[in-house]
Length: 152
Image (cartoon, rainbow, N blue to C red; front, side, top):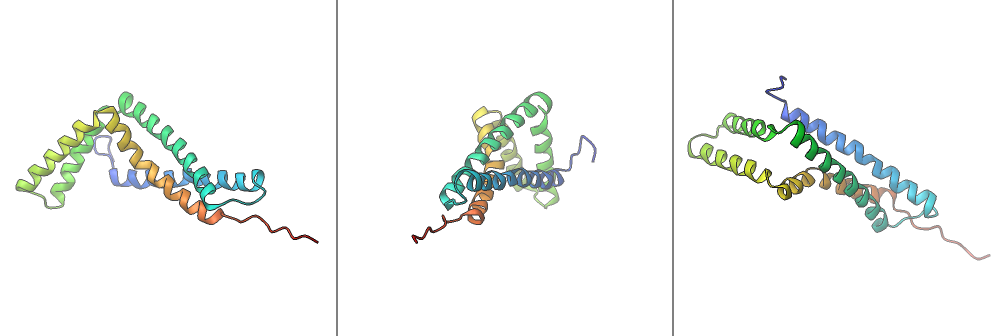
């Protein structure tokens, strides 16, 4: 793909795959806490909260990195992405009033993305749900009750 026509779908797949790979460190963090700091036991809730905190920290780094990348290196990203969304709508057969409405939505989205709060919230919604989902799975896998101690 040329720089003027990026492969958005391919990049999204790579992006989400790298998020899941990065969030696999949640497993390492929770297991390390369980085995080395909590006598080999952990509740689902504690495992989930540790995973969620790791996901929140990683997501915050992601948001900050995207803010720098977007503002300093890719300020035309939304223009290019809006053009891509319009092209995809046309390929999907949207035309006439439907296309006009879609283009209005795209322009509204571009305008909203200029707001730092909206920008931040939208960027968090790209990554944080993946981290929360991984945290739930990890908590379910790693939960372990403390060993029963029997009196002799």
